[in-house]
Structures are given as C-alpha cells and as structure tokens.
Image 1: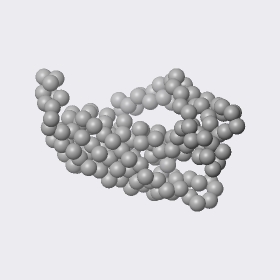
Image 2: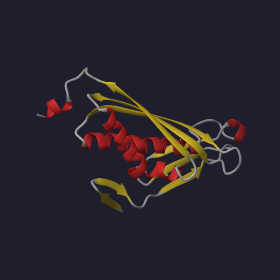
Image 3: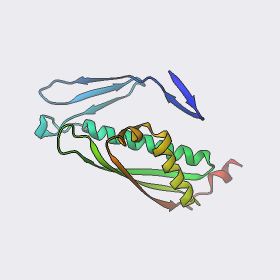
Image 4: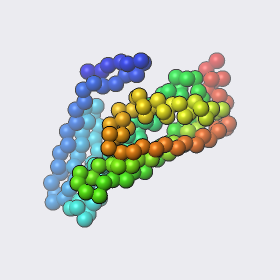
Length: 164
C-alpha cells in the first residue's frame, strides 16, 4: 500500500525476504519487495567470508539513504539549486548484547549554488525530527549528532535559469 503525507509518498507495508546461502558461511541474500537484491555477510571471525556488508552496516546505509533523500527533496521543493548531497554516518555500538547503536554522527556535505546555511540546517532538522523514519527509530537507542558543510558549485548555470 502506498500512502501520501504532505506531498511525501511512502510505502505503508513493506516486505523483504532474507535467505541464508549455506555454503558453510554466513552469507545471506536479501530480496526486497521492490525487486532488488543485496548480499550480506559476516566477518571472517564470525563465520563469514566478507562477501558483502554486515547487516548492521545495512541499517546505517538505509538510514543514510533515508535522510539524504529527505534533505535533497526538501531543498528541491524549497526551490534550492542543490547539486549533491553526501552523508557520512559514524556509529558506536553497545559492548554487550544486544549491540544496538548508542551514538551516531551524521556529517552532510551538500553541494549547490548559493545554498543558505539556515536552509540546509532546516532541511537536516526536518529530516531527523519529522520525515526520516530510520533515524527516528534509531534515536530510541542512540544519541544523534549532526554536522554539515556546504560546497558552492558555480561550475554550471543555475538549474532555475535552465528551466525558464
């Protein structure tokens, strides 16, 4: 089921299948309801063969994708000339089971033309407080911090000039 909330479209119900590949290791193939697949694997010391990202790395990857998606969309809808958005997540985990994330730092590098610091900061804040389901869930166990930098990209004409 797909729902709409304030011009954001999201899936209400999701499905994925995770299948162990066997082969005497700890590799898994995860297949999404949208038709994509990814291999996950464990570290060699845990029986894996290092053939893919660890499942908890996938949690961070998904969270980074979720928040970057929000930030770009919010800036675009605000008529900002955004040209790139990278986010690096650095996380710490609990030392004992369950080894949940306890601290996560998000560092955004946003590229664009004449982007305002307050506008980028607001987009990041909206993502983390209202729209990014993944970071909002992780905030239940982890302390979250954010930083960002803006890189002015003046190499191409404004996308707003091109649309006119």
